[in-house]
Image 1 (tube, rainbow, N blue to C red):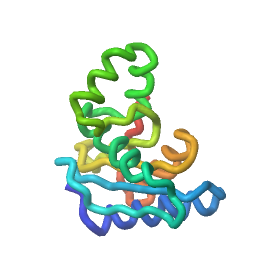
Image 2 (spheres, rainbow, N blue to C red):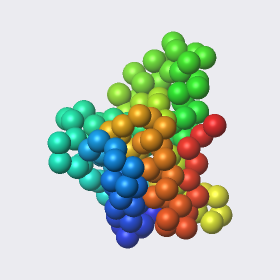
Image 3 (cartoon, rainbow, N blue to C red):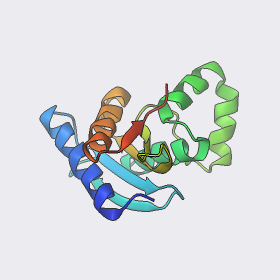
Image 4 (cartoon, rainbow, N blue to C red):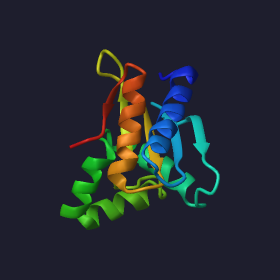
Length: 142
C-alpha cells in the first residue's frame, strides 16, 4: 500500500507543478489500493466540485484497473457502456485524464492519484510529475 509520506509528497509535488505552470487552483486526492483516501488538498478558490472530480478520477482508475485516460478513450468509443459504469460506481468514476494509477517497483498497484482544476492533460501531468518524484511508476492509461 502507499504510505502516508508518499501520498503527502504526491500532493505537495502535484501542487508545486501546478504553481510552476500557472494553473488555476487545483485539487488532488491520493487513494490507497483499497480506494481509501490517504492524502488530499484543495487549493484556495478551487471550485466546489473539484474534490468529487479528483476522487472520481482516482476511484475510476482503481475500479477499472486502468488510468483514466484509457477510460476517456473507452467513453468516446462506447458511451453507453461507460455511462453504465459511472452509474454502477455511484458517480465514483470520472472518465477523463487526470486519474493515474500508482505502481511500485514490482509493478503492483499501490494506489491512485486524481487531480482536477485545469485541462485534463494538465491535471494528468501534475499527477505524473508527482508520482515520479516519489520513485514510483505512474500509469495514466493509454
